[in-house]
Length: 302
Image (tube, rainbow, N blue to C red; front, side, top):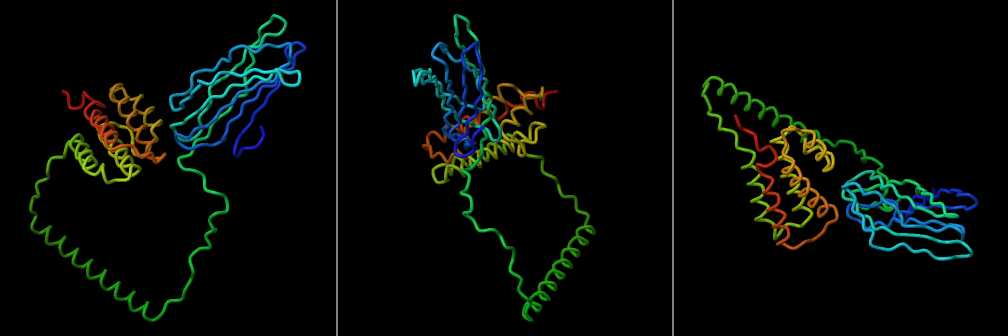
């Protein structure tokens, strides 16, 4: 492996009979953010007697979009065959994303052997990394001595707090003496709370910055999910929430798919700061509404 910024190169060498092969995997850049374009280049250097065939690449994970529309290139260079192919990657989940397995069939002296490229992992961050040394280190708070007026203000604050505490205690004692039964309103259905949050977003869609709009939309979806399922949706990433709901037999598969698809679109727009049109934002609101009542359809059934 050579270097980590801005690209990473991993190489390995193999021998097929008398033919020497060098396999190389290169990520540029080595780290990315959500939705960033990252180039993954596979290359091989072969003796003139070897012939590379079509590369074999496994399907990427759901959180990784891979464009392999570019064709492979093979040419002679200083008596050796130089083969390469590029893929454009876009990641939609945070953390380490393992790249799919890739291999290259090679024909040497009428015999075909398949050599695997070195495995690599893409690391995805939520925000662009800040330039090193751009921020001064924190030297802590500046210590200043208290003045006489500071002691006077502190005494006044203590007296005010004591008076407020006495008023609160007196109000509590009077309430205990009255013993008036206060009717407790029936809890509001989660679907109604969710709908009210979406209505508020729909009214603000034309004025809110898109990152704020999608952050509020993702929070409303997660709060609704936490209220109708056993998953701690507010504390999980989108991928973790997908796995947690998939393990719950009470959760509808179609409802989970609709929820995760809407969250991923919101995450992409929120972290990439993508400014879409108002009509598209309202379309995502309609998708969010379709989640209501579908996650746990049997909830409340006898």
